[in-house]
Length: 110
Image: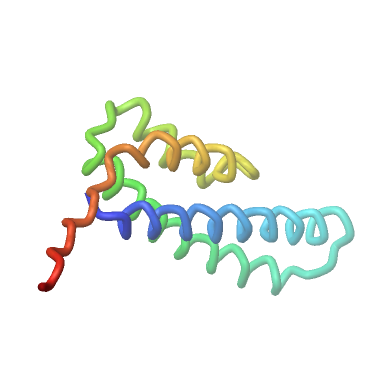
């Protein structure tokens, strides 16, 4: 497996998690203080698009790492639970590191 597969997943996991926290803050302002209704709409749509991209990258990583379905499902759902993606991303990175392909050694020129 290429390292870029893990990198794409990690970037999207962080971006999705941060946008979910921003969305939660917007929801608090919208429903708790009756402010920011337009911002909540925009942030929720952005998070939705980013979550779809996260799903694609997480599924790609899971299929290449040959994860069992429960583990894949947990990683996919982690993008919907605030702060969960941060912890799941670290565990996934630790588990996938040994599966990464080593670059082929470059022959020395004489």
